[in-house]
Image (cartoon, helix red, strand yellow):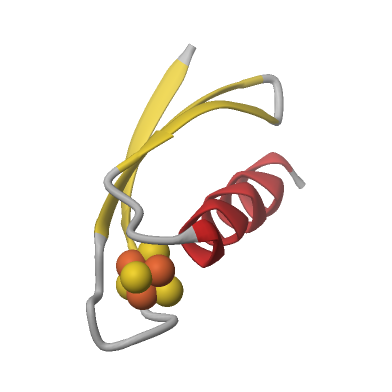
Length: 50
Ligand code: SF4
């Protein structure tokens, strides 16, 4: 399992989000203030996996 930290820039809150993932699948997302952060997490993992 991999773990990364990203900063969501989708709004001014700029949440620090921790993402756990494995083989391109997001397992857990913490620190996101809303669902857009979840989408950012999956998008980032997809980009890392491609
Ligand atoms: S997770 Fe939601 S609240 Fe946090 S920075 Fe992203 S858009 Fe804003």
